[in-house]
Image (cartoon, rainbow, N blue to C red; front, side, top):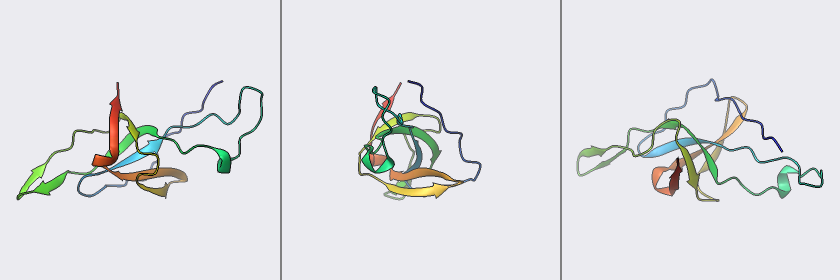
Length: 104
């Protein structure tokens, strides 16, 4: 079963503070038996690629830099963030604290 990869959106989106923009990973469209799975029955993805990173939060007057960078593959909370349409693709804007782990 091959999964298609999405191209990065051509529109630019700069998140603020400690937020990141994630392109969710594609989920397979069919099961082993060849049945089609409609979008409403699919699980929400919890993995994706970071496509934009904010400058970091301000704490006690100093900017705290982000541990994430563009291109990182991450795991995030299932119901975290705000979905947003960017150039025809759905991306998620999420706080860095809602990212659970980097995949290396």
